[in-house]
Length: 190
Image (cartoon, rainbow, N blue to C red; front, side):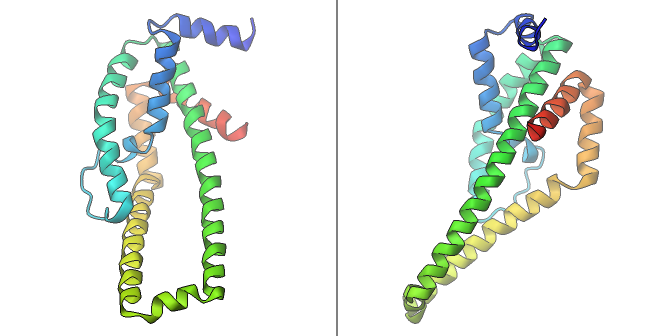
């Protein structure tokens, strides 16, 4: 039996049609930033763009999480392992691609701003009172956004918090958590 047949047999044992399963998985992966902060509703560091993104994601993710939990709880242990593996694989690939694209974007922005500085355009913008005000507002907005991202990374990637989350999920759902870890490992390796 090939790997493809084993996966399709596991998926056939669930009650959801394959297209609906794919759409559910795609929605969960797309909104993967929401579960990391959905337990904490205190947005004291969420100024700027990051806070707006998180508030928007919360309004979208809350009903999706409810439906996903209802459907996920109906799956067998094999189905939970396969769903966890698929979600872990997709989430790890998403994380890798997002990280690479972020580094590329930051590098391109740095080069563009250096070119603007060399051409004297940024000096002109700083030489007027309106330009100073716009630069100060932009700087504050970017600093608030960076602070929100920094605090979320510090909170959610804290080794103690990650260990507690894994332990809690292993007690609650061992097949899904094991599948997620397996899928994430394969996603990072492949």
